[in-house]
Length: 233
Image (cartoon, rainbow, N blue to C red):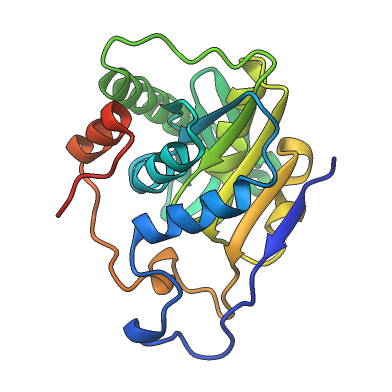
């Protein structure tokens, strides 16, 4: 399947005030995603959080669906001379790079390779920390549902989906509260389906659809993975 997207009614015009934003917090976003996923996932299913913020959303989805919860750690590749510009992403054993963009921008290949190495090291460090000695999930023949708290460029989703395919997932779904319009088209065949609840216009940042959007700590990620329940604040 080419990647259909479910788009809720998007916000139009100016960024809404806090009281008008679609989600109170990541917990509410997870509950709403779970309602949609309950009618669409094909068993057996594994929920995979993209940390950090995605862990809180994914914990609610896994709890509501009664599905196992695990984690996949992708890392954005930034252009060497522009940290805000994403030109790809990596995950464990996966490298997704926009080589055409890198060439068009005249990026130094050696600097790009160095960025790949740096991010691979960080992927390994974070994966080891979050798994805490547990083996990777067995995805063979299963539906893998990637959950984050939002998507900007989509590169980390591409790398995470590639990791799922590499580990034998039969289907790969992406489920996020917010993302850019046309996300499924951007992702192409990397996912079977993209579920996006809100596609704001203009899309400024993931945080614009949340009334409360605090930073998430590694300790909170670990708590979610252990108990499938976001820690109470």
